[in-house]
Image 1 (cartoon, one colour):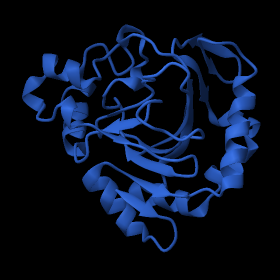
Image 2 (cartoon, rainbow, N blue to C red):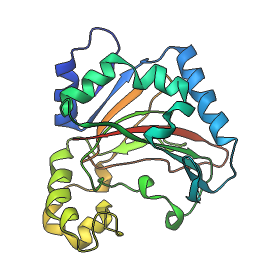
Image 3 (cartoon, rainbow, N blue to C red):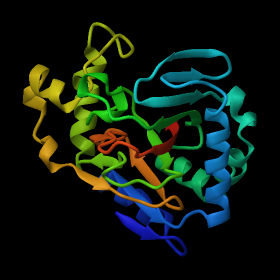
Length: 245
């Protein structure tokens, strides 16, 4: 699941994500690029207070683990480094097109988090629980501070993509509340509400630790979660770029 940049075949990346659920490409960014991306994120976060999830351009809601941002395409111009270094990269565009197709909803939205607080499990955001997304999605992710277990590195259950897709299609999409109506999404809830569809367990999750120059590609039918700060004083920046079929 971990590759070195340079000479990696597109087909190998796609096959790995479809079988394992994700992959990491080491040192995708130069140190200079990683620093530009980090400073751009920190500048954006400096413009609003703690415990806020800002939805660009002018909406907001609460986020108890620190700060967060939801960036929609009409606000991408506010993040020139992100546009130039990531969204305009020809290889990453080819990966998305190969994974889905040329008519997919590429780079549909960008969700970012700045976790810097140790909170109880009751106050964890949706993304920090081990979960499956309610919509099929392919995400490009990077972590400008790097990510270790202590500062909320991404957790995944490798090889769980097919099970997650089955739950999404045969349980989540049929929820009477609708996909945006408080639908169950965590593996714990699946075990309670559709146990016949669940074969994996949280103990199988592994931490995908990475540096600030690495990039992660993930199919979110795979059980995943991140941003659980374990030690006071630790911080995590995370950027997830969403595409859908």
